[in-house]
Amino acid sequence: MGSNLKKIKIGDLVVVLVCVFVILLCVLPMINLLAQSLSSSQSVINRMVSFVPMLHSQEEFAIKHGDMHYIMPEHDVGDDFVYEDQTGIKNIFKPGITMESYQYVFLDKAFTRSMWWTAILTVICTLVSLGMTILCAYPLTYDWLKGKTLINTLIIFTMYFSAGTIPNYLLMKALGLLNNPLVLIIPGCLSVFNMIILRSFFFGIPDSLRESAEIDGANPFTVLVRIYLPLSAPVLATLALFYAVGRWNGFTDALMYLSTAPQWVPIQLKLWQLIQNMTAIDVNTVENMAGTIPRTTDAIKAAAIMFATVPILIMYPWLQRYFISGVTIGAVKG
Image 1 (cartoon, rainbow, N blue to C red):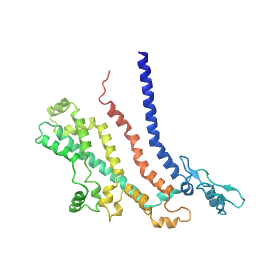
Image 2: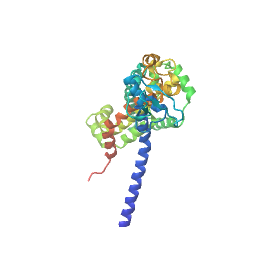
Image 3: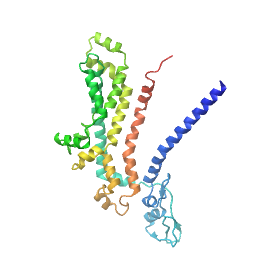
Image 4: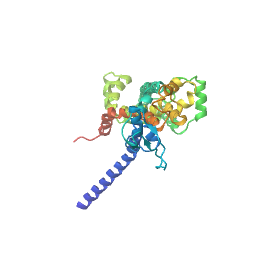
């Protein structure tokens, strides 16, 4: 008995260590990215940033006194530059935090406009997708629905077979959705996988609840609103997060269908343009701040990535209690 308990404890310890290792693998890149976004651009260019923000002392001195000048060393010190002020004191790098990259991103009107549009688009798509998922899953719980087997077969068929990119593009063109913001909402408003999850959850609700409501004169819509939806809050919250994350991170549909409508470009496509082309930031902002903030650097790209990632991460604490309810909803109470 004691040997079995010891094996269980060792196994639990191994599982915990593996989980901690996986968490570190996921978190460390984000920490490094955050450090780059809070570092000076010269520090990032010289590859001096690693999990700790670095502020170039020469830049700080030049901002305060305006009398710093660059002196190239006679001998290379790795990939670094050595700076010397008028007093002969050499400064390379030191820990510190600067908000210059975030200031650059926040002052870019195109980037902030894209952020607000993506937030609005995410809310709209999540509500529409949840509505479509509920309206598709709920009728399939009724045994008397005519053609139920055929409908289920056609729905599942779409999970494995699709027309492809070119036919989809031709369809959007025929429907007049090219360069239209509706192209970001309508085509992906229903996920078959999420619908199957919700339908399975509806099947788990006792039929006696529905039958009792029908005896009292409730119609199917009343049963849905008064019984099924309140009991489905955990799974609806989970599906809402799936839809929201999918829409927030989506950019391929905008890349294909919004070629001449930059005002409807979501934040991820804007970020993709920034990283790929390094020309997505407004020229006016660059010219107005050319003396203090460099053009597109790794520090600015890191700040832009954090700017586009943090809002969707904030949603998790608000939905966490629903996840816990979803895990314990079928538990046996003693």
